[in-house]
Structure formats: structure tokens, C-alpha cells
Image (cartoon, rainbow, N blue to C red; front, side, top):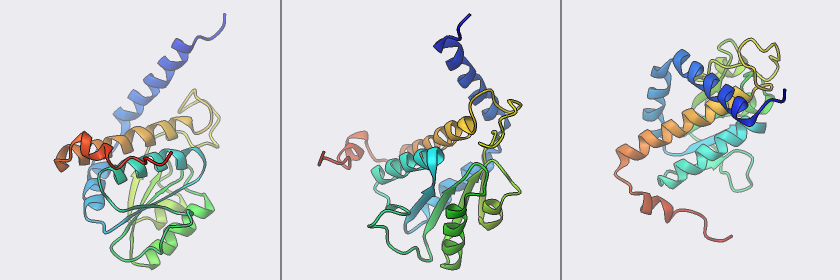
Length: 186
């Protein structure tokens, strides 16, 4: 019998709910204050988890925050008073770790989003945000029945959407005001 989309979607939702139950929510609640207190927010991540972080960066821009994606040609140097959001499921992605170290040396706060508390990214971060999900190198099926790292990426997106939503609801900014910040050039 073939696997159905409904069965597969059910697996995804079940794993997201299970991960939700395993979360340390205090770490994520503290991120709200770090974002609110930052002069500027920088985002760095590669691959699929980097895409999830870029979506969050765009949402933060809609709130009127100063947001930069590391690696873009218009991204300025990071300075003291800034916050770097750095994401890597394994916590071993060299470009992400290098960005975290540079940010730290510049006096910025580093918030590392990872599945590995013992990773180089966690060591380099001032604030560690753990996502209890399988890393992309874990294909055992024990933590997730989904393809390598998918649950981490999905949960990262959900968590960052939760961060955005909490900041938005407390901001007093209307949906219409945020919509005015959408790109209108293309």
C-alpha cells in the first residue's frame, strides 16, 4: 500500500507536537528581550535552516526592526549592541560558527539555534536556543521519521514564527502597517 500525503502530514504534525512538549520555553522567551533590546539584528544560516531563518528575518523587518542577512552585499559590519541569530542543526557549520565568533569579538550578542547543546555553535553563543530534534546527520529514525534534519528546520520556522507573533502582538503595530513594509518592486 502506498503512503498517502495525509499520513505523511500526520507524521509531521505528530513530530512537531512531540517536539513542542520537549521544549525549554524559557530560552525562547528570553529571545524576545534580546531582539527588543538590539540596535540591529543579523541572521546567519546555511541550507534549509538558513531559509527558515531568512523567513524570520523578513518578518522582523515587517515589524520595523533593522535586520540584515549575513552574506548579502548590503549587510554592514556587525557592532556592539547588535544581535546575531545563528542557526545550525548540528552546530558545526563552519560559516555560521565563524560569523558567531566575529560577532562576539565585535561585542554583539550571539543567539545560537541548534539541536546540539555540546556543539561549537552552542559554545560560541551567549544565548543557546535548543531545538530537540534530529540533526541532519542523524538518519537513524529514532528522533524523527522524516528526512535528515527536516524536523529541526520545521520546528525552527515554527519557533521563530512564534517569536515574531509574540513581538507583533505586544508592539501595537497593525497588520496594515506591516503590510506597507512589503517589497513592492516585483
